[in-house]
Length: 169
Figure 1 (cartoon, rainbow, N blue to C red):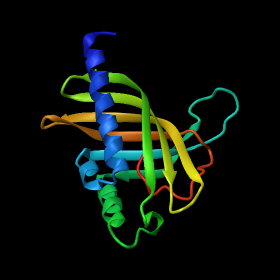
Figure 2: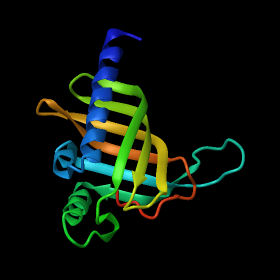
Figure 3: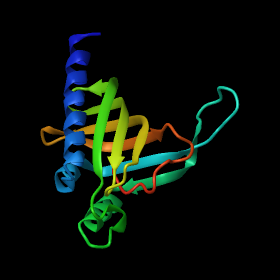
Figure 4: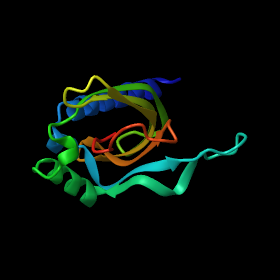
């Protein structure tokens, strides 16, 4: 591992940790500022396949498949009285780990893989949700800052064990 890879890994670890805190703090406007105008934000449906055949997720069905416009609509809706699944807002804690730089061009583009575990609790419920998976992120460097231009979240479960997906991964 060379110094450029070590530096890039640290940089994107900090970026992802900051993003997790912003989302846990329910600061969606600040989070939206981290997104690139060409954003693609996807979670393919998991499928069970025999053997080690890959991929074990759908390439044409998604739990969500959003662009920057639909993300803006989702965020704006969460600020209204009509986002019933998030009134009151969920209490979340995001744990980011195993950050790996797949591709990196300094001050241009980067591809970063990471693991994500989300703990979520609602209302006075003693039960909680755990959502885990792998994120494959693409970043674009714009005006002195890295912006998320694509995120594919590969959830570990084939059956999503949560009441809704009204939170961001």
